[in-house]
Length: 59
Image 1 (cartoon, rainbow, N blue to C red):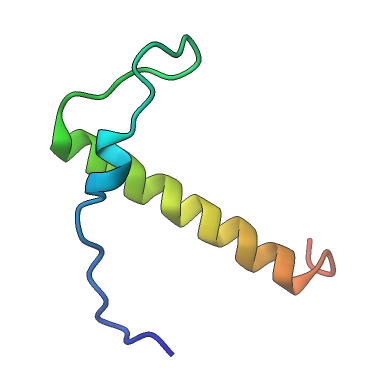
Image 2: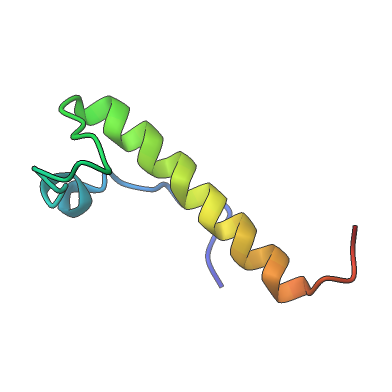
């Protein structure tokens, strides 16, 4: 089980592997902004995964 004080480190691999010429996504040059947006997207993915695990019993 993960500890409650887990600090997410900078997602360097994701930052370096951004699509350069994709019209769908915009390249983010600022590492601080990239890390902030990446953490928000990570939280959204975790919440979706958590709600899917509970099922559709709640409204």
